Length: 351
Image (cartoon, rainbow, N blue to C red; front, side, top):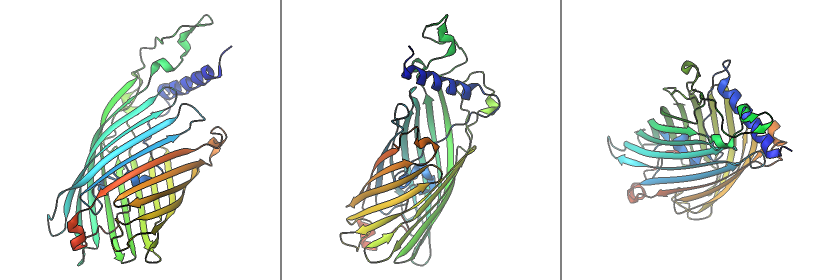
């Protein structure tokens, strides 16, 4: 009798093979995403490189999802960014950063390993330097691969028996390419209790070739450009309590993602230096036609620890058996003593 795992593998193989061999549609993959997208700012928009008050920022995030559907989809990302040239003209500065991430999905261990380097210029405007216009660029290398030995193909079943090892010479289990991204953002400290940040970006501008099928027409397998738009706000309703709504839009090929929500942020320490005091937060977000999400965490002396859980509300919820995705994120910002002395604060470090 054929086991359920075998049936699952065969089904996945057929779906995978159809994606590779179809000549009616372009084989364009989708980029990764996180619920706590503010914990991976260099993935969201290269203009967010160095958009914080401090000497250095280090972030790490881990996501686990779809455990009840197949082998767990696991994503981990780490980044480091910092100002590298300060006071170019008054308070303007140049920042650089490095972003690494690895995504593994499904029974075949479809892997996406990427390394990105970014640079951004931050121009402060206004008499009190309460506005910042930022432009960023990013380039990197990606390797995608999967394990052929964990998939079953039709030519492995001969006269009713299974003989492992596909003979299809057109299938390649690894692809490598370089990609280029760019973005721009605007941040404004409109008052002591209100600030906002807006950004737009474009990823995969060079549309690198991406296919596992050696026979595929290379003109049809360029990785689709991913367009993004972001908006984040910080509004204090009291000395210690603030509302922090955020919105993220992404579009790539025929896929669109919209995420919106709000975070309740409560300072429980000294509110004089809001960016480095002790605080707790609780948030709720909704990814349209996909999932409802809750976030919670703690901030302490430049550290921010966040947890998130996605509850699937789409048609996949039955297959997922009401199990969604889990995330844990940690960000650390090293304070700059000069910022405390001058109280030079980035207008809205929302991402």
